[in-house]
Every structure is written in C-alpha cells, then in structure tokens.
Length: 446
Image (cartoon, rainbow, N blue to C red; front, side):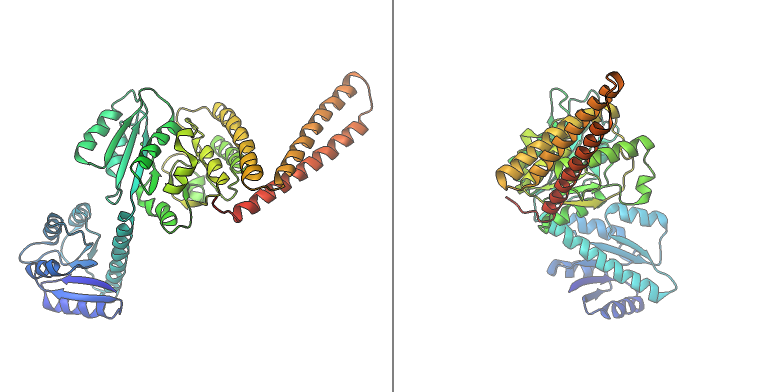
C-alpha cells in the first residue's frame, strides 16, 4: 500500500483528485486543503509520496519543498498544478521535486499520468532506501580531468555512502578541484598517487580503501564524466538481489551505440572482446572492456585488489580472477557519450600487443587454477592438444613450403599432413571453448 498526502486549496479539485486516486486499491490518500494542515499531518505520519498544488494562499509548491528539506523530510514530492510555466518546472525539478505535472483539459489522461508518477516516485524512494541500507561507494580514477571531475563528483546520487576520488599524479588542477568539492561533501575522500601508476592501479587504490571501510558494493565511474549515474541502479540491483557479484556496462547492445564506432574502433573492439572472452571464460559478455562496473564485497575480497594489473587491461585481469573463483557476471546496458572502442592517449597497436601478452598469461593461469587445481575438467587437455596440433601444423607448413621452394621436394604429403593437423587442432580448441562455455552456465562460487 502506497500512502499519499494530497495538498490542494481548491475543494472541487481536491475532491476530484482524491476520488480518482482512491480508485486504485493500492493507494491510500490523505487529503488536506492547506500547507499548515499538511505539515501537521507530516509531523504525525510518514508518507510515501506527496502531491501538491503549486500556487496556494500561504505559499507555493517550491517553498513547501524547501520547508520539507529544512525539516529533514525527503518524501518524494510531485507538483500538480494548472499554473506555472517552463521556468517554474525547471526550478522545481532542480530543487528536488520528483515530478512536475501540468493540469490539462483531459482529466482522464492527466489523472492516469499522475497515478503513474505516484507509483514511479514511490518505487524510486523505496529503491533508494534499499541502497542506503547497503554501504555503497564509488571509485573515480582521474588523470588530468580538471574539466570534468567537478561535474562527475556533483552527479553522484545522495544514496552513495562514500566517494573515493583517485588522482593518478595529474599535472593539472584535478587534485585541487577534488579537495574543493570534498570541503562541502564529506563523502568525498581524495587518494593521490605520487607518480602515475595507471588506471588499474587507481582503481586498485579505491578498492583497497573500500575494503578498509567495509563497503558492501564498489562502483567504478571514470573522472571524465562519460558514465551516466542515472544507470547506477541497473548496476546495483543484480548485486543487491544476489543474482551476480560483478556488473559490467554494455555500450554495444543497441545499433545507436555501434553507429558511434569508427571502423578502426569496431575492428579493435571486436578483436579484443573475443580475446578477453577466451582468456576470462565469460563468453556472454558483450563489452568486457567497459570501465563502468560494480563489484560485491565478497568478490572484491577474493580477487585481492592489490594484485590487479595497473594499466589499461585491468578489467580483463579482474574478469579472469572472478572466473577462477566462480563469481557470476552480468551485462548492464547503458549509452556511451563518447566513441566506443577509442582509448584516449593510447595507440591501438601498442595496446593490443600489450594486452595480448597479459591475456595469454591470464588464460594459462586460469586453466591451471580453475581446471587443474580448484576443479579438474578435461577441457584443459582439449586446449593443450589443440594448441599443440595447431603449432605443429604451422611448423610443418613452413617446412613444407621451404622444402618445395629450395629443395624441390614434393609438397602433397607434407601439405596434407599440415591440413589434417590444423583441422584436428582446431576441433580440439573449439571443443575446449564449448566446454568452457558450459562451465560458465553452471558457475558456482568456491
């Protein structure tokens, strides 16, 4: 049952609105004709939603909202009025009103819309209450982000308990701006590196502080203000409901996101995504390089943040560790304001080469830890014999061509053997991937 406090100084409108809302058995309506009467009711009872007129004899809707904030009442407020213009609506929303609804000549439509707003406001309030019951922090890695770090810090919702802003030895005023915001927002904690260590190291520093202060969930949002906090709930809900321990943003699900890609960005992103899927074992992830993530406390404790890869590529390193210990990972769709697949200040060839070495090392480490040490599975032999056959076929292929060109030896037998080994090796590797995918579906926590 959703309790609603309705404030309207015109008796006819008050009664009509009350009658319509009471048609819904899930809504309990308390109606009053003045602000003083409303404040008296609020002192005796807690409501889920407040619906108020804007222009009233004693005050207006925005002044009422300010009064409620001053008294520490954070009940969602909907301003429902026939008077006012666009500027008033903007001011009301900026002051924290949940919704602003202009009365129209179609009462059936406007009351249906008001009812929907009541449900949405009540749901949002309940959701934020659930979030406040958990210690949720945001880790913000920043490097030379003086133009954006302020907007990023201002955008963090009130239900976030702690904000770790990590300055990775910026050469601009990033650290000073963070300190300035920390003076007015006690949630903000500045962590500064003496020398540039990389984005992975910055996130690792934030994760360690989150564990030290016993945070339940740690969200990562970069300091360039490219991650919309409006989507935070989509990252938090799967973890709070114990459906996952790690949520990864997905910018690629809709065609409107893919249109932002350059051709080079599309090719490099597709290649790296495939490599990360093979190395990490999370085959369902669509955008594993995404930096917008959320992780649970138990997963963070298990992967040891101090050992995370310090540079770009840290996200794939985290995924490998999570897969070894059997933590569930989910995709979270969200838009990207930038160009997908582009990494500022990073040459694609250098990045792909560096990440390839990391992924190769992590792949063999995962095979050893997960399928030989923690839980034996024969897929490691499929991978082993597959790689062995493919490498042997490549060696034989080169040897056969060398013999044909320089030794005038027949090519048919060696070429046939090369193709057979290549085919057998490819089948072994594909079966290894298939078994790995099956293990992801049946994932359990060790």
